[in-house]
Amino acid sequence: MHGFCHIELSTLDLEKAQKFYSELFGWQIMPLPGMEYMIFNAGEGAIGGGIMKVDKIVQQDRVYSYVEVEDIEAILKKAESLGGKTIQAKQVLPDASWGATGVLETPCGYRLGLWAKA
Image (cartoon, rainbow, N blue to C red; front, top):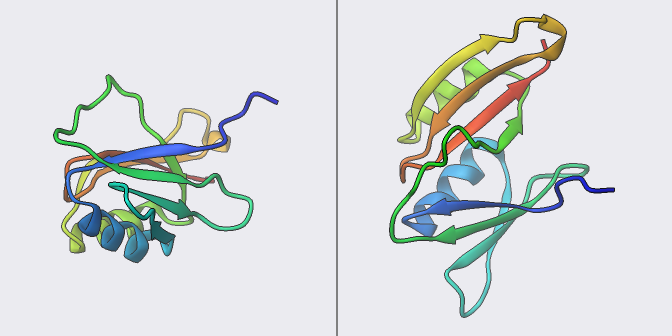
């Protein structure tokens, strides 16, 4: 009962983040009136969360939120076409049954992990 229930992502530019995430993942993103904050719905059965405007992106020491995707390489390529960049190309985990990971950086500098089934 102590699972994650809400994830917050940081950005320097809310409109740029809204465009990036909605085009990359198809998330529904809605601004909250009177706040520099947006909420996102990642789809049925997925954890949603918020996107908050910050003055500076501070990378945690390898603390990433991971988004489950079908094709890591395709998402990394699409992220690059939207102004992001690949930080870690697809890497199959030591036991392939654990899946594979990748890491991208958004146009505003936030790093986000990707995970896919093997």
